[in-house]
View 1 (tube, rainbow, N blue to C red):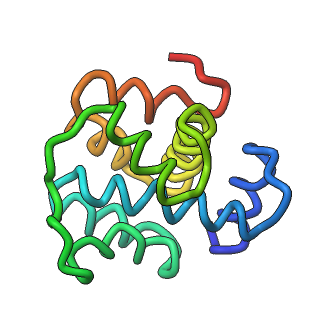
View 2: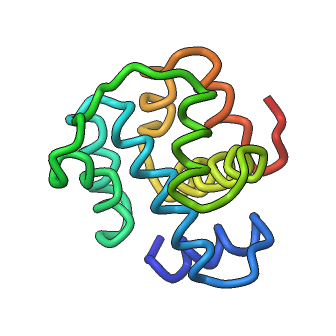
Length: 135
């Protein structure tokens, strides 16, 4: 999947008004995911995504943040996505589900399933619920 297709899919599924909103949702979700999962797993996931999108997973290390593999639950994940995307928490949870669904479709070899397995149960349910919210 190419960058434009990825962002267009996020925009359509999340019913966002602009590509900029879809870019913001993607960046917010993947930067937060990049903080949560181990660096090696983030790198493997980034390698299967379009370069511009995969960079969001690497950003935490580059910016000297707390790094990867940080421990936090779904509530904190959603809070961070909301802060980064400039949305409220219910919208952020929906956007995170949409972006995760598109990431799963854009990658192969069950990689996103491996990512989900590295998350606590509540966060695993969030990222695997898909755009319809079916868990």
